[in-house]
Length: 113
Image (cartoon, rainbow, N blue to C red; front, side, top):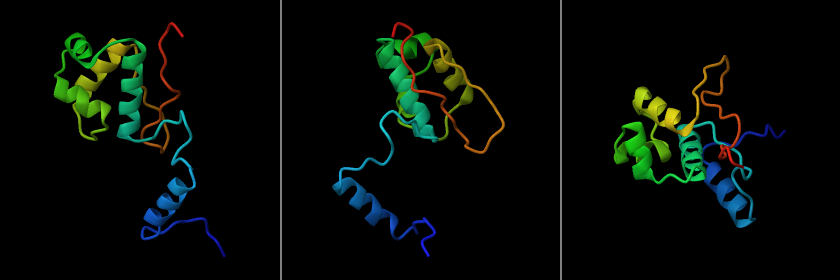
């Protein structure tokens, strides 16, 4: 009986098989429910607004190392600084009941699109 579960020792083999068959780990445009998904959304919004990292750092009052860590999914960052970056990008942080941990509603695009 196939339970549909992959055991930890089988996961690397499954991932290699998927990649060799041209399959993606997640659908194009899907946002991960992890800190790296948040970072990807921040980076996408920054790029959509035409901001480089240093300009965003100046506007948000954060250092380049912080922004790099945020965009690359570091799990432990200061929330006040994350909110400062989100505010400059025109994004909001919402809390809601649920179990996903991090949920990003949709890919972030510029207001001009």
